[in-house]
Amino acid sequence: MARSRKNDLVVLPTARATYGVVLLSHGSPDPRARLANDLLSRRVGHRLNAAVSLASLDHDKARLDGAVAHLQERDINEIVVVPLLLNVAYHATSDVPEQTTQVKVSYPGIKLRVARPVGADATLLKGLDAVLKASGFRPAPDTGVVLASAGSAFESARARHAALALEWRSHGWGGSAVAFASGPGPRVSDAVATLRESGLERIVVAPFVIAPGVLSHRIASEARAVGAIPVTSTLHSTDAAVDVVCRRVEAAFVEDPAPVISLPRT
Image 1: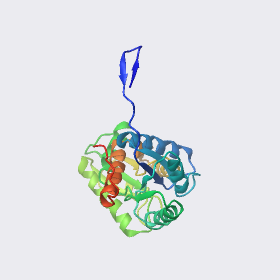
Image 2: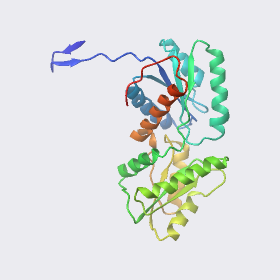
Image 3: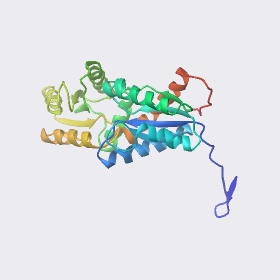
Image 4: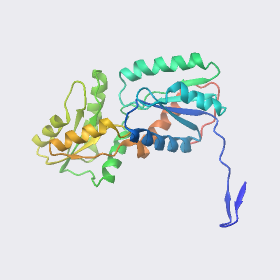
């Protein structure tokens, strides 16, 4: 235990992390995405007292095997992989299992758990509210909101995002709609038109993404093109995102409990 002479403060040593977490994102060519994910990783690590690394499925240089190797170098042999994917679709059902299986073969001394993807968790609606509040918008009956997500070829993923957008209205907004940046389903222009048909003039479009990048930029551009209000901030900085990621980690230990590791209460 160290004592600061200047302020006479007692500084307690940080407990050594007993396990690691890898936040596995889709990846982006936009450097802002990695910076945003790094902020999220630091908050998750602080909350859980875990060693957290980043990896991506595409674009970024950091791959899952490299993140695991980095943690192993720090004598971390218990690792939970949390896919930072808001769609439970192709990447979650194909790419993630393929890469984690390869890592398990390459690192037989590592106990690797794979958590459920972040997905379209309803808690993230609180995160969207926080993002809009930071941009000057609060729930109001004269304001409509568009939950704009990446889109997916998987109908089940699109349906979950549509249901989430519908639920968002119950937070006090005048109306809500879903839009997809790719694949089947309504685009931002369609969602904005639907809300205007219901009598709403002030419409805010929020990107339902973890980190800023190409996708959030495209969504903002589409919103401006139809006279809607784009919000460019993303979920990475919200308490809701941290909460969901931490719950995924804790659930991974419950679903695959051996060996026992004591998790801090959150």
